[in-house]
Amino acid sequence: MGRAPCCEKMGMKRGPWTPEEDQILINYIHLYGHSNWRALPKHAGLLRCGKSCRLRWINYLRPDIKRGNFTPQEEQTIINLHEVLGNRWSAIAAKLPGRTDNEIKNVWHTHLKKRLNKNQNNGGDTKDINGSNETTHEDKEPVMVHTTSPQQFSNSTTTLEISDNNNKDDTMSYDDISALVDESFWSDVVSVDNSSNNEKKIEAWEGLLERNSKKYSYNNSKLYDDDMEFWFDLFTSCRRIEAFSDIPEF
DNA sequence: AACATGGTCAACCGCTAGTTA
DNA sequence: ATAACTAGCGGTTGACCATGT
Image 1: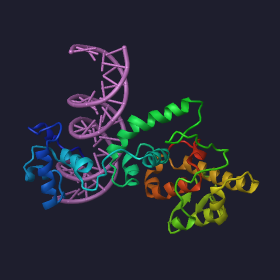
Image 2: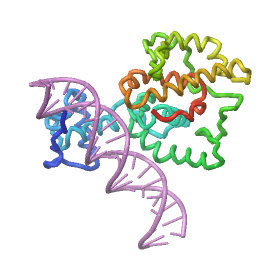
Image 3: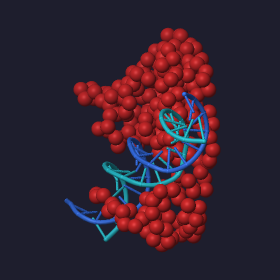
Image 4: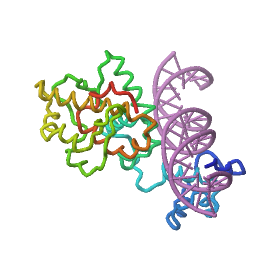
């Protein structure tokens, strides 16, 4: 492992791209693809470094880029995903087709973060992107961010090792979770009432999540990465993300 | 009209992880 | 095994523009 040599310093052009450069890059990639970014500018006749070409292509020239303002739905999705994923912009971008990590990062820093801070300062209750009051933990009508039935991740081979080293039984497979979170849970969660049954289920679920959140620290980043999809589904499907706001960030 | 301030966003920088020789 | 190299990521910067004074 080592750092790439800084070829950029040697006569490479920097700064904004011209339409001519864009066209050269587009034409070249259409003809030859971009298997080797480092060699690309030389072959294409561009006085840019490979990094710059790659960035320009990914963030601006790619044909599937969606231009224009973010919709309120997209913004809400970013907020929700950011709660789950943190500053993993590429992971967030993967959930928003046509949007780039750079774009999402910019939107977050320029709009969404401020808006959330403002909302939090307004009495501490959070609002959604449309400015309506968000329901809190105790509210009666939770909003499902994204619905996923247990079956949708039942093919996952994920096994959760719950961290308590002294407790060998503290390993939960998906089957264990399924037993804990039966079919009714998913429908119940959508319309949370105050029945003790549901409260117990939610408490059990949150306890599981809380313990896992301690376990899945950076020391377990590989496992964390492997299970990203699982956790995303888990968090977004289970109930409002706000319900887990007390869980420390991974 | 001139200047100051703040917001936006494209592009760059430095780092890490993965791959190759 | 390891050094060299590349791709990709997140943080930061700076140019440009709009708005306020």
